[in-house]
Amino acid sequence: MTMTYTRRTKDQLAARVAQDIFDGAVVNLGIGQPTLVANHLPKGREVILQSENGILGMGPAPEAGEEDYDLINAGKQPVTLLPGGSFFHHADSFAMMRGGHLDICVLGAFQVSATGDLANWHTGEKDAIPAVGGAMDLAVGAKQTWVMMDLLTKQGASKLVPECTYPLTGIACVKRVYSDLATLECTPEGLKLVDLVDGLSREELEKLVGLPIAA
Image (cartoon, rainbow, N blue to C red; front, side, top):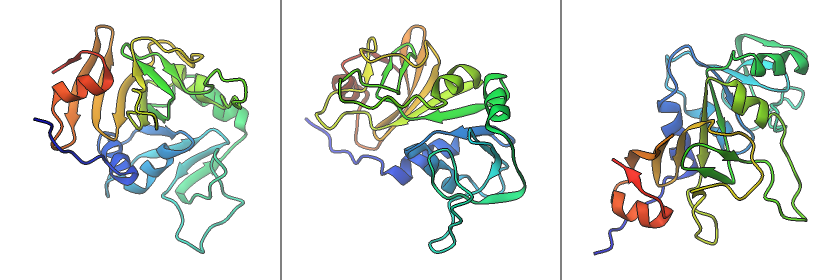
């Protein structure tokens, strides 16, 4: 019997990621979906958000009409600054990223392998625009790299794969994948299940992904 399940919305997924960010963590949120995590950090939990264009101490997105376009993140989105926040040269920001000073980075991805290889800057297609940004520096510099993405492409193919077919951003760097259907850990032995959306079984998830998933 096929079970019915509801995918996490983008905001529900962002809230799920935010739930696992520990108090006192220094975190970089990648361009795109990961920036939503800033809006869902639990009240009372101190999380220091860093952006590679040279900001430390970002807050949630500004209210409509309160945007200051002189205060933007690396994705050119307006942000807010918390008390004690600071600005600095992007070279210092990249030194921070490369030097192991970030506890967690949350990135989007085109593909992630079962063992944690990451492909998120180019699809290999002739007309695709490469956009590596700071992803390679983040993937190897942060203490933990998490990926936040839809589990399947618009064509229904799994973005979790045995081996990435797109150009790699980093090798064995992804620790966790947070998706609209499940949260999974990438280990040297393959994928391990953390949680599922209601109504979806591990066996059905394995069929969607096409890979074994340890309980």
